[in-house]
Image (cartoon, rainbow, N blue to C red; front, side):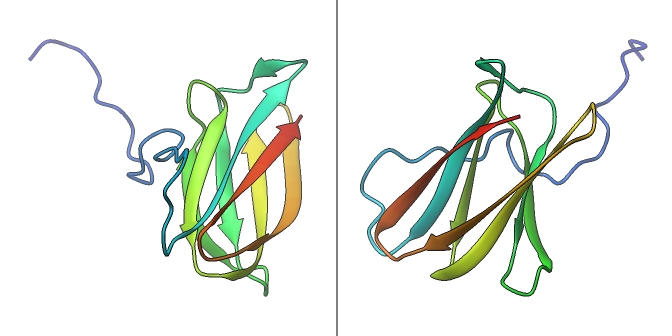
Length: 106
């Protein structure tokens, strides 16, 4: 045993999710970037809540402060939670074949 601690259990999603730049086809994609004073906010989570405010998915923020969700078309809330009391909510509408891009300054 090397003495190294294993990573704590988490949601299993890769940090930031899988970023999409084009070719979403029949997908509805919600993605964005969280910043503080212009720099990426690397520590925290982005959550996807349905129209009833119920939790659907979560990804840790990536090194660039980014996150990506693949959603069904409709109305959603993206909630960002990060150390220091950061809580940001942004309402979005996902549409098939489109990427919703969010810029979220903390």
